[in-house]
Length: 333
Image 1 (cartoon, rainbow, N blue to C red):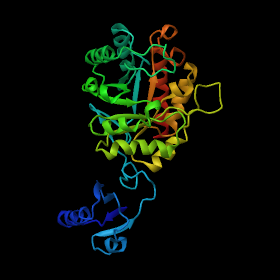
Image 2 (cartoon, helix red, strand yellow):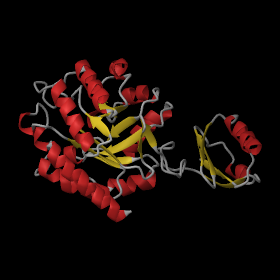
Image 3 (cartoon, rainbow, N blue to C red):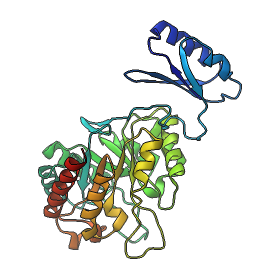
Image 4 (cartoon, one colour):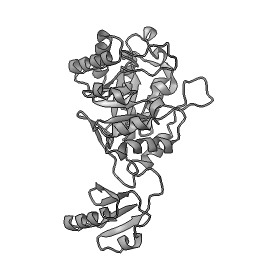
């Protein structure tokens, strides 16, 4: 349920209403805009008298939220959320590009790539330290050492880092990580999501391989229900019958999500297509359809990458992608 307050409502009147609502055993989430205040009621609202609230002189309107996702719902928070990742803003008109290798392989590799993607306009450095792989025999990442190398690259370039977590027990290793990624395979790892919700770290939540948009938002709700509202959503393609690409990039998810939620939405064209030559057109399409950013895999030697070399583009190709994306963004402004 949400209650929209009338313009001119005094702080005393607002606080008095909030106190009364909380006495009804619901949580009240406040969203302040330039010309409005929205009170979002979370909990069992079945016994709350909507007509009584609507009759109050300070209340403009009251309505129930039918969707099961509440806190990430745009009805609760009409303005776009802007997520701050160590000074880099995502959402609300702020476009962010995250770039780097699928996995950290060596100090020289990650620092070289970090310097190159920063020079081309990347705002965050992505790199895998813990790698969930389909085969148990594939390279699983450098783990704690990989995070240390990412932090070295951050020190060298100033780029905040984003890397994937696979187990809540690893959280102590992520204390200096700027943004924690939840991969597609863990989108519905609800115990992990709840633990991340208890942190204040920005979370990059990727859509699962075969999950609906509703399920995607419910996973974000798990994190928010524990108190962490710093979430960026990432569409990375879903599994269909198509075999010419690794997945099928659902660009229609961008306008749908922008209508349903206030959280920023970025696109990962690398995992979506699985083919390096398709990354550029899909990155341009993502910018054109209103995405808040991109996540792109960049490797200085894709032929010899230990992970996902086929979908990784070179630093030179990334520079061209960044240029074209900026041109698209200028056109649609």
